[in-house]
Image 1 (cartoon, protein in one colour):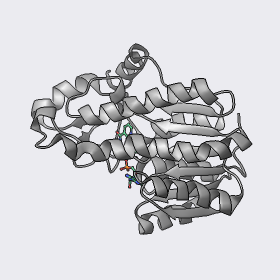
Image 2: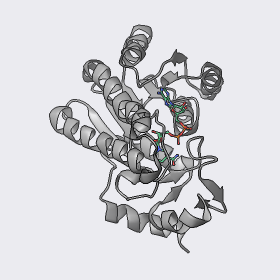
Image 3: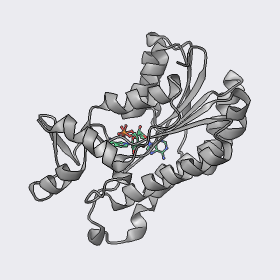
Length: 258
Ligand code: NAD
């Protein structure tokens, strides 16, 4: 197991959900944190809690990962403050939930690709030279939607599948120098899904019409499931936790069927 105490960890989208929880888990293990988000006040709260939990210091970076200059600034600010970078966690993401035919303008969903795919690519690009120096790690976050055709998530699925393909290629190119992991969580209750998907008794509903269709393909996980997988990647040195769909399916059936 890799000891992350004293390591410098950059987490994007750290003001809520998986990113926030992951920040706390790294904090408990004594890591220095560079927390990136667009919302200052939320980020300040997360940083305060992280320091109480054990992070020696949590640096706040206000940035939009869909912007190339912002991603460069995230990495540069982290390295100029801490002098190194050990883990990059590309967690920031948004979704778009609609039947494909019902989009009035398919260009409207470009923002999903800008954040989920390009944000990941930009941060990775600027972080690689520093991660090579520390033989560090990249943790990417895709989604089970990349594997499992899920109604109303066509663009989101595509952006996450692109993240997987991107990192699979990077693993071939630089995997001997930097550990690269992609996690593919199922459906998790967070700001991204709240109000759009409804959770009751461990089951997820969109509306009656789509409920059965979605439940039949989409696994449901507690936020801790994704955090645990990402921590395993960062702290325990697993190199790759994306799994073939059939394996994940059998695992998920066990989770939400009696
Ligand atoms: P969330 O909305 O709580 O967290 C996403 C965070 O990213 C937010 O803090 C948001 O402000 C931030 N963010 C969004 N766009 C940004 C941008 N352009 N620049 C900087 N920050 C930005 O949702 P979450 O569920 O914690 O999502 C975290 C990651 O997990 C995302 O990549 C998401 O796609 C992925 N994921 C979520 C689920 C789920 O069911 N919730 C399932 C699989 C994967």
